[in-house]
Length: 383
Ligand SMILES: Cc1cc2nc3c(=O)[nH]c(=O)nc-3n(C[C@H](O)[C@H](O)[C@H](O)COP(=O)(O)OP(=O)(O)OC[C@H]3O[C@@H](n4cnc5c(N)ncnc54)[C@H](O)[C@@H]3O)c2cc1C
Image (cartoon, rainbow, N blue to C red; front, side):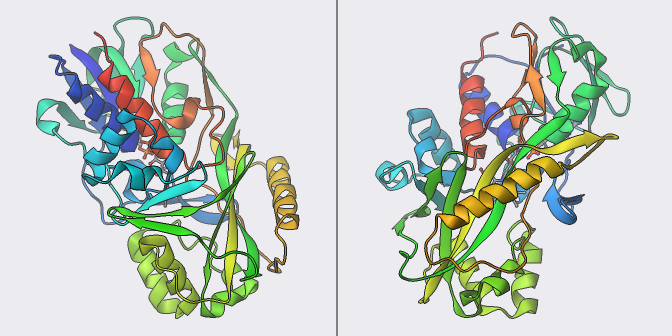
């Protein structure tokens, strides 16, 4: 019998395990997740009428492609710094904390989940089909029919996969309420403004760079230098999904499109390099709680919520002076899922670590915050 079965090998599962290993308690831990590094690490699914990177079920999960953008305000306590140091080495605290809530930290070298110290835990390569039991002595049924007995289950399979797993596990239906809606951060290109609007304000330090954003309720606005052909809103609108892709796709896109503006954005995103430009491009990330609906077992875009998002985009645009808006544009979805499960009873020995149980993410990228929570939970684990 295992003390703990941990489902998943993404960023959240890795952080929990990292915390658990700090306790130095003699725990029998088993991690169940698919292994191997397939040549195409991220799966694309059709959402919002386009293909987006999403719901990958392979080793490392979505963290195989994340950008590592971390709001500075999440780097506020000792635990978050410890986790950050275990990812990026010794970086000066002050340089990361910067000066305000409205800065984000962008690492030069993005951390990828790697399940350190795997020797001390039992790793099973495979998928969990069902969880049996609820209040004590649960067991895990693997896709190949194997059963694992344990005392506690920690689930970090990502919102889409955690939901499917819980839907298959009828013993959990009294402990968790499965919603028919799911949230996401919607990203949108707002438009181009000339340099009368202030250019991106950046600070550099050892591990990466940070830049300033603007927070408005559930939205965050950020900007990037508009280099060469990106001095035109319609040109930029063609590339709204450019960054939600695999590294190889991004490089291919940069080469085949021959857009100097796109290269300028890549240099800013990756290295914080601000090339000379006559203006900036303005983007927004908007929290939308019900952007997907579950219909016939598929998550599809909820048109009502999409209308609200477009209304928010219009409001945000009205608030930016001198903005030139593209004629046609698409919004980006599919990488920050949340809120499709409501936990009901706290005495259950099944715990969810990922964002499926979060009913609100806030405007900012949330992953690091979830990682710190999982790390703290692992560290405080009490048999
Ligand atoms: C291109 C891109 C850029 C991003 N950039 C940022 C960013 O800059 N900042 C930010 O905060 N966030 C970002 N994100 C979001 C971030 O990557 C995710 O929020 C985060 O990776 C979610 O981690 P997770 O561990 O909860 O789930 P996942 O990464 O989805 O991992 C789930 C794990 O569970 C395993 N699994 C699934 N089903 C089963 C099963 N049935 N049995 C066993 N194992 C299972 C999977 O194999 C995987 O290991 C980005 C995402 C993408 C795709």
